[in-house]
Amino acid sequence: MKKYTLEIIIFLAGAITMIFEVVGARVLGPFFGASIFVWTSLIGIIMGSLSIGYWLGGIFSEKQTSHKYLYWMLLLAGFFIFLNAIGHQYILNRIIKYIPDFRLKTTLSAILLFAPASVFLGMVLPYAVKLKIQNIRTSGALIGNLYALSTVGSIVGTFMAGFVLVPAFGFSNILFALSLLLVIIAMADFIWIREMIPVSASAILSICILFVWIKKHNTELDYIDTDTQYNRVLIYNTTDPLTGRPVKMLNVNDEQSSAMFLDKDDDLVFEVLKYYRLVEHFNPNFSTSLMIGGSGYAFPKDYLNRYPKATMDVVEIDPGLTALAREHFNLPDDERLKIYHEDGRTFINKCDKKYDAVFMDAYKSMITIPYQLTTQEAVQHLFDILNENGAVYANVISSLDSTNNYFLRAEVATYKSIFPQVYLFPVQYPNPSTEEKGIFQNFLLVGLKSSTIPEFENKNNQINQYLSHLYKGNLDFEEGVLTDNFAPVEFYAAKALR
Image (tube, rainbow, N blue to C red; front, side, top):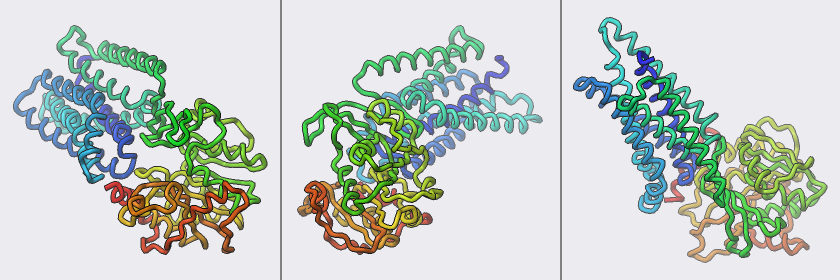
């Protein structure tokens, strides 16, 4: 087995590198979302660091050729991954506080957290190749085989991270495990374990013990910190600042996504969700609805209780969130509620069903807005699946300050290009002062398929209160319409956050 020690190390280094990169999105996600800026920074910095590692490994291999230096590379890579695992929050909190530009934040975060380990992982391949070469006449085939082996390891690591490790164990556990595995391999030349089979067995056993201990430890805490296939999720108990009532909060990628009152699950915690009840005013005879974005399923539960004769289809891309909603947020099994686990855009692209209302709750993040649901083509699909008097009700986070509401203006322009009537309802600050205009708040964007101008008064006092928040300013914005070809929503978010 020792004959293939270098091959095994090369394979594992390739796999660990890609696991490290995929997990990196979960490290940065709670602070910066999963936008194109995060992936650009991660991929660019890690590839650049690997290139530096390849270069340094090649130079060093010409001066020193000993297995112990290879093990030191692995040991240092494991050390820096360990530092990432224990120190990423400290570093990211300070980057958020002191670095003004959003793109610079993601780039600097990737450099500090992922570059050092990636450099040492990159050094492994050229150095191991030099150790392996014995005959210059066969060196070409040998180098090709070893690079292919490294690439296969990278492929295996990528699929393992995305399909198995992250959903099962969470990113912090994986970082600790990668660090432990690298240290064990690196120490193999210095301790009594000499063969890779017992080394691997010991590493796997140690990792399993670590995972079991962490999982047991987490169950004793008063919060749940877990990863699904798509998201980092935190569930905890807190107090609603408006009512003082105890609530259970669902955070998705460090953003409050859903909540439920604990003393009595009888109302909606988030005010913006109550504005979806404007469906009673704009189409009082509705019976079928579609909601895109389930999360903790707060509004679908309210909808089932409030409208006993109506049905709802919910499209939620993350089945893990649905499972958590059933376990922790009292999501019921109800024949009037159908749940589809797929991307909202793919669902509406092929949808042949007609709805009276579409509730869009996929824009609720300031940082990670799914661009594919914001474009003119997507809005056209929404228009097509509505009945004659149907309407779209979309939750958008923005401000009324023209210097940081680029996405809101572009999205209103996009909806106006399809729907004959578009209205905005600011939720928290309907008539903001000069200072309040720059504060981010929820907006309910309503697109009516009918051309008939509605009344904006209702006999129901609650509905009438929501209608009184109608934005009466000019909605003829100059921003260009968002399309599948051009939808720079992350750029708009970065400008706003700046």
